[in-house]
Amino acid sequence: MNISQAAKRTELSAVTLRYYEKVGLIPPIARKNGSVRDYALQDIEWIKFIKCMRSAGLSIEALVSYTALFIEGQDTEEQRQQILQDERKSLQEKYQELGATLQRLDQKIEFYELRQNEKMLANGKI
Image (spheres, rainbow, N blue to C red):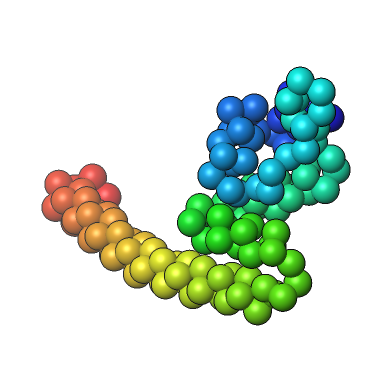
């Protein structure tokens, strides 16, 4: 399938697909006559995987390394697993930071709500 069809199937733009290939997020796409990209179903599945990993928060750098190792073959499985474990650890740390930030925000919001209630009581509006 051509790049327009692949873009439609993956819900990404043709520009994004070209970028993904250029930076190494996806393996090189086969070309047919006239250097037109010819996406196979396995390419589409790989793009969907990368899209999923990006939306989960994995870095482009990690995914480029992962893709390069994938292209090298099965001997790189441990290295690929390590990349995913490192990314998971990083995301877990960010998750914990976000949780702490949410707690602080909730406390501050509660503080303002209590102040507003106190003002309403003082003014006889409650």
